[in-house]
Image 1: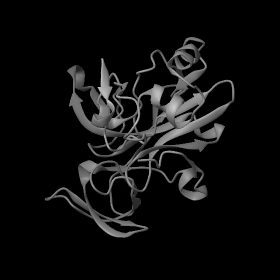
Image 2: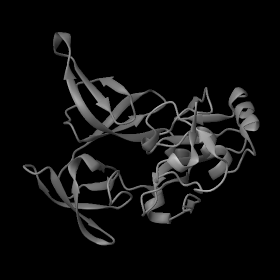
Image 3: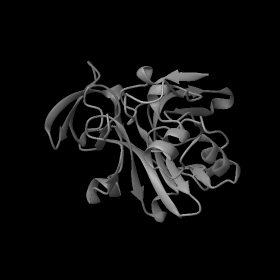
Image 4: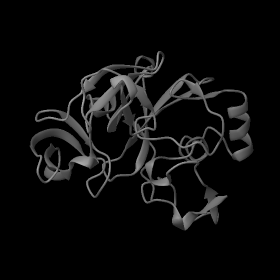
Length: 231
């Protein structure tokens, strides 16, 4: 089933005018971009859907170090796309105005990604399951809380460390009117579930559920952004 172009989320970096329909992703449409849009419309490494499907069939495109299976497979924030033939790597991020973009990254950054802990469950035998923002789940004894973030080793699919939501932590706004902003957390209001973030645009108040604690990324320093600003 397709999606009408006029109905695509505002955070998709594709023109509002064009073909009537675009590909509908398999999962939540506002949380990422389908791989067809990334390869054909943003990176422009394929010219049409047929070429995209062929690249996928030949296992020339990896998502978080694993072959992609379908062209409507959705990506999520901080997912890593690898183009095998050209040996190029990109990370899904947000522009300062809240649209998805792809930032080129070096090889040594492709084996780790960050995801937010959206909830925890206690299973039998006191095992703890951590449910993450990217859809992954881990059974782990790592000391972390809901709204903290985890650094995941993609090669071994294990948790490297927990990034705590706390004052002085570096954080990224993932949703809401301030989506795409990033900076240092000045203070946290636990009662109202709001944090004050000191971004380059000044201080902003953000709902905790719209924040993700991250490590400072290469793209924050080098500003090597590509595409993704079109409206």
